[in-house]
Length: 292
Image (cartoon, rainbow, N blue to C red; front, top):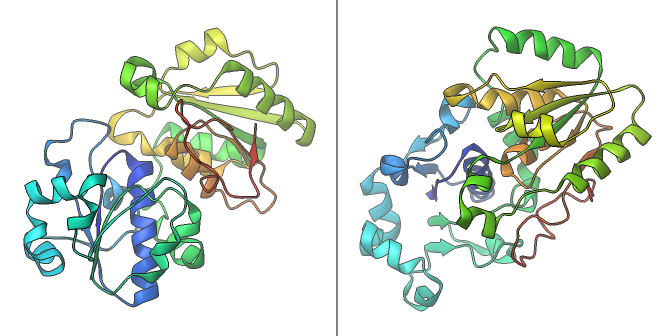
């Protein structure tokens, strides 16, 4: 059995699921999802994976965790053991992501494992890409305004542009960790797109559209998308994935919007600087994408 610990927003949940799903396929093992950390989680929309996508893996129960980890499955103990300095005390089944870049040790796991980490690289699941794309088919039909938007996106040379602010901009700790993509980044990305794409049409997604309208000048056809909120927020990712090209923020949310885009000739632009602090992100962005 492979159990993966899920936490964070939808984009993070997708990375955690995709890595574990690929491992379970490789090892021919059952996959279960540990969603216990969402019990008191107040950020984003909580556990969304199975509501939004065709992910059929069952939720792990306490007995599953004990079967894999034994006494190390107890929450207080597990929280201590995932700390870097406690690595020597972990059982081999407790697999903690050692660093942000791709970890080759993922290829040497046994059939019973509990995965703890974010696993933010397609290298963890690219060998199972076909299945991952099936799992990440949006299962809820579009409603109301989104239906018209999807149709318009299909009729033009649509480019999604995502500006992530929200909890990044309002929380000093988040700013110190993640930072915010600069206006210069977006202007450079727009410039590159219009040089490559004929008659571009930008669809602008943001959790702070008012700020974008005041600060980011787009001298080309564009439309702001600001009606999907709360439990409907995932629709923005769905709409991003329907665009022909993508400009993403330093956000796993728009990363997945671009990855799910199936246009074979897509141009995806991502920021060179993903975090404020020095972190090796060389494995985060697929090689065919452009970093500016």
